[in-house]
Image (cartoon, rainbow, N blue to C red; front, side, top):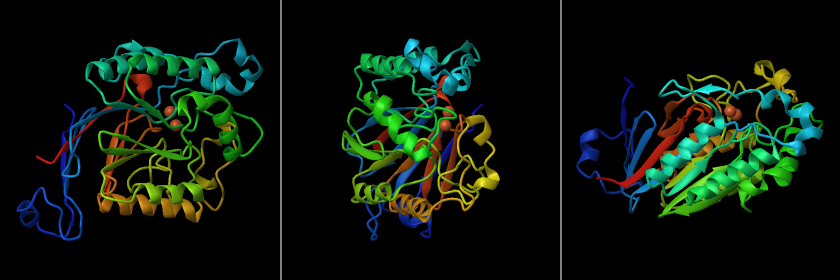
Length: 333
Ligand SMILES: [Fe+2]
Ligand SMILES: [Fe+2]
């Protein structure tokens, strides 16, 4: 039986619980509102006095759709490995054999059945920028009638072995192929509002954060409005490996084991830029002050939870194997 996690994140972790318990639904003197989070398998519940009405979100990452057609022919050398990477999978709950498209369809049907207010797509939805795969994703998402929002992973835009820097290639293929998924939003960072909750989508598909992303996040994270941050690559958290790579001190050339298979430049010898570390600190600060209630990522293909100095981070199972999160936000009871 899956371990049930229940934790109460207090506004000031130094206060005894009894002190906070006397005023459970009021902001404290620092302006921080207490929040509570519970998780059981794919179900995450977040309670905050700043949430005005229930909000239900479906979080989907790592579907790895691999469909392509004749338009892909000139690019086969760049996409052949990932086109064969996740063609046959096994559902993590039922253990039945399945595949990425069937898993995606099933999760979208469930989102509709459960009355989701929005679907949040956290990257690696396609295994490479196949036009047919992107068109399929957009069509299936539109058919749900549910508002949906997307950010990229490290594969959606990546043609393995293509000349260029990661940032240049991400920009090129995001503009040329992923535009129908972004629907006009800025891929670097954008936000939307769903029933009073701000959803911030960050593109950290190259592990590194650009200065304009840091500036945009600081702007978006202001104010008491409840917010969630969504991105593909999880943030550094003690106890996890370098794949929790955004802001990870071990993210550097010496620890890069994937560059050959993915046919991309090695991670830099010096590791992350100062901007990426500043971004990590800015997210942590926003979480500690409960301006951001939690962050959600994918990439690892395995569900996990971490709490770093008041920063709750959820990582979801791969949707290629039927994984997803159903996140509900509710006013503090
Ligand atoms: Fe993935
Ligand atoms: Fe990934």
